[in-house]
Amino acid sequence: MLLSRLFLIVAVLWPVAEIVLQVMTRAKRATSSVRDRGSHAALWIVIALALVAGSLLAARVPARIPVPTTWLLLLSLALLIAGLVIRTMAILTLGRFFTSNVAIQAGHTIVREGLYKHIRHPSYTGLLLAFLALALSMGNWIGLVVVVVPITAVVLYRIRVEESALMEAFGQEYAEYRRSTRCLVPYVY
Image: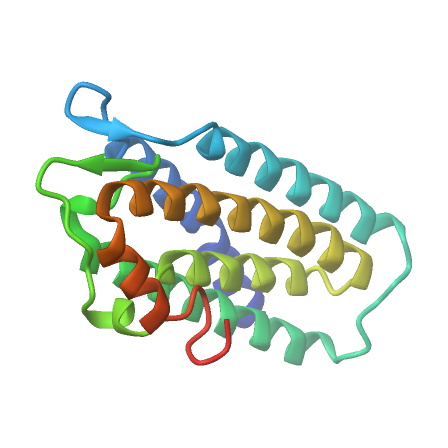
């Protein structure tokens, strides 16, 4: 089926692009103030473990999501594409300030344009939508929970690390930005 092939193509190309992005945008200690506190490694480890565990459980534990497969796949594909578009827009908006590890660079400023007008961490919003899509595509409630809950938890930890680094670097200016925006979802959270 064309829909499942399209989903598979996007789902396979995405991690390849993420790995390239991670390698190319890793801040160096010599040119940046790296404040990662292990969150980069934790993110990758939790993602890998959650995806493997979720896939294995979805294949072995009968807990089917009661939605026709075609509709579930269509929803998954829409969420995956939306998540990747949001993540890409956020990364492009940050430009040189985007790093795969938490770091404050020389000349760093708080970006308040594009998606950053409304939310502080749109790249994570996109990332979480994409993982929700992968989990939904499994068609299993257990797989969905096992993928989404730990990945969301590690992303929230990563956000705390980033916000701490930004507060340390920008103080009152970042506190003001936090008061005027939401963390992940406009007007909600």
